[in-house]
Length: 414
Image 1 (spheres, rainbow, N blue to C red):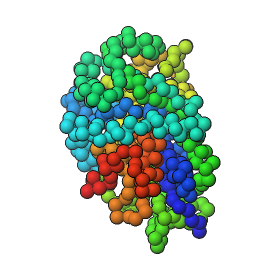
Image 2: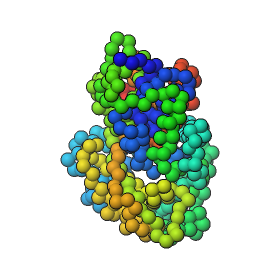
Image 3: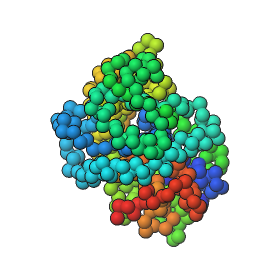
Image 4: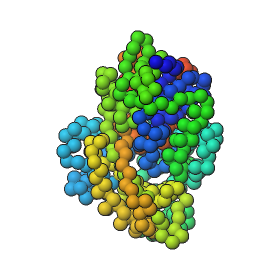
């Protein structure tokens, strides 16, 4: 049996960032996962560091959008019919959190943490030798219809209040930024303060390597074995039992497998998502991620090719892949950008861990001494990984965190 100061469960971008920030403060840390660093949910994201984020994804409000989804004709969402009774309470809570007044409240609550997103990544990249992955070229959202663009007025108002720059563009203005885009859209918005990365797995592995260089230990183990023994937490690993005074749960979509066994009930659901890589035709290129907002997918340049990411799929986390959204997305994507053939023949599936109010939990686990939670980052695991790691490290040390942690407490769910 070995002992350490802290155990971090989960070696995705969030858990790796937590472990690195603790190691930077001289804490003895073991980072435990059953898989390789960054190989699960953190691998498949769109690579955007959304320092400009204002509103989270919302429940659809227009009847035509709801009908398309219900009839399984939507590109932005899919579902397994048998799963709907299980996820219905979460969807109702998500719908309530999508009311205009709640969205404005959420925007104000999350802005302080999101304002640190890019700078916290830059700091870790600098010391991890990972700055070559970073693109500070913003991101572009294109809108095929005038209605969807007109509905951005509340977001524009809040952006002005928060001091976030944006450029509203016509088709020609967007093509000046991205000449390879075809003019199938009417309007666009350029968010210059967003950043992106060309290889999410490479970044997470670089942070893990820096963690190891500071004396941190990576261990293969089963997080579900975590239990209390005396005044310490114990987890079973490939190298034997590991004990620590404090433990951080950063298990993403697998968090509730452990937490429910510990008696913690939290409304965490998963939104499954897919990606594929394509080769561009001829000399076509992109300098930044592009969201085709009305269709519901994103195309972003990665080292592996042009990555197309889908919207949400509501299905059991471990159910076989059903990537039907690509049948609708790829033809529309080829209207916008000259995509060639699929680059690697693979379809990646991952699960985004989401709370209905679109805020993660960052802080102490109620009723469990020495247990900390860094879970539920939804679409923003990559964005908030380093900021979350810094927040947790400061709170564990009893110091003032980056921002008020109250909006991220587990107790908000009663």
